[in-house]
Amino acid sequence: MIFRHSAKFFALLALLLATASYSALVSAGAEERWTALKPAFFGDRPISEEPGVISIEAPMRAHDAATVPIVVRSTDPGRRLVKVHLIADQNPLPLAGVFKFSEEAGNWTSFETRIRIDQYTHVRAIAELADGSLHMASSFVKAAGGCSAPAMADLQAAISNAGRMKVLLGEAAESETASSAEAIIKISHPNNSGMQFDQVSRNYIPAFYIDKIGAEVNGRPLLDVETNFSLSENPVIRLNFPADADHSEITVFATDSKGNRYEQSANLDDGAVTLEAPTTTVQ
Image (cartoon, rainbow, N blue to C red; front, side):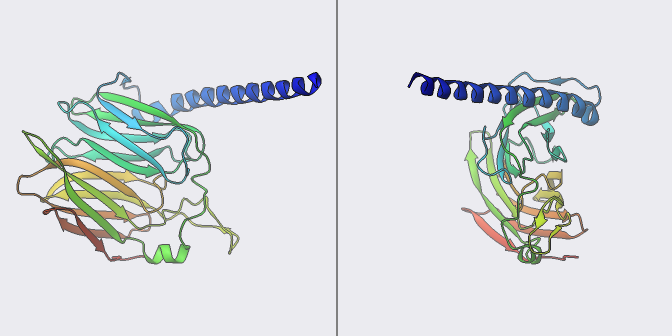
């Protein structure tokens, strides 16, 4: 009886030690990865990690590595952010997107998207302010296999629907000084990574993904995103931004790695508006 309990104890101890060792190795590898990535993207520019400028929210352990929700918030409305680099250190393409915000559209408050995670990694949001300074917030996400995970939809159906958009618009909040609007941009697209295996053809599915997303409000630039297959299948961007008193018209466009362009417009009116656009051209 004593021996049996001792065996269980030592088995549990060995498991705990192995887990601790693996976590230590992952942590060490993560720091080495970021040490290599930082100069590649930002040169020798200093990056502040002091809180108060930007924050990032991500699940500690993702339910689905192929669709990991990420929320980035501007936490100091008095300082204008001009762009945010969203980086998943351990992804094949670490730079999931560069989100650029125009001065004409005013200060944004938050955006949300979904990304793929290939293996345990830090996800970082590095904000560049109007004064050129860089500020970073990060979160460690436990997920793996998202870049090679099978597509959720039938491949041919996904390709035939590529470029269909759904734009949901509504009032997000209102204060004494300004009102804000919320836009949810959904783009149907397989966003194939080139790492996914087709069980029918027994071949890898060629890469085919959205590489740029843009939005304008009342003819003024709002958002410009340079991205790749690190965004999930059927990319989604949820954005809060200042709105004109007479409400707004939003125009959204996207291009993909085959040179296709998709575009649609919608009006911000009383309540939410849902607008679905047909595919423009698929090559």
